[in-house]
Amino acid sequence: MNRIAAVAFITVLSFLGCATTTELTATQEAYLAEAMATPLSFTLPTDQAEKAWSRGRSFVERFGAMRLQNLTPHVIRTYNPAGPMASFGYYLRKIPKGDRTEFTVECICQNMSVSDASLQNAHLLAYYMKTGNLDPALVNR
Image (cartoon, rainbow, N blue to C red; front, top):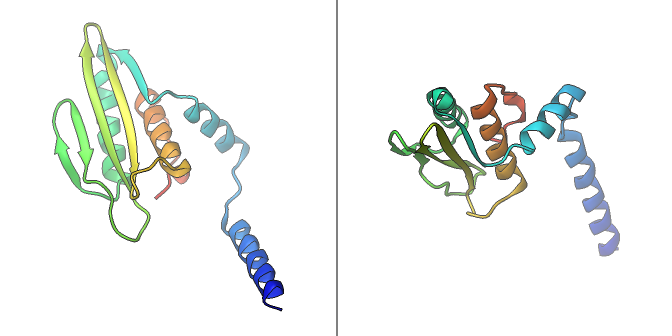
């Protein structure tokens, strides 16, 4: 009897998980595929660097659950996430290299390991920094 109850409970949880998952539109699926293909370390021409950096800061301030810990011309870093609630912190670096600027993006989970959600957020951030295109509905919070 306990085995049947356990199977039923797991089945119900599975259905609830499916019910709360939102379906992506074809446009969102295409956007997400492009974003996930964006490397987390990338370079841009120096004349595009400040706009990209500004977009990065805007993203972190808008979607990051943690307060800014360090904000310099070359680093944007939030405090590391902690506590029982799922939350994300961010660490962005900007390194000028002649006529190009290199950016590195990280999204940090509360348990400090890379999760699918934190990896998706990092790629969405990198893509937004590079292109200026953002679908806020896809950002994990």
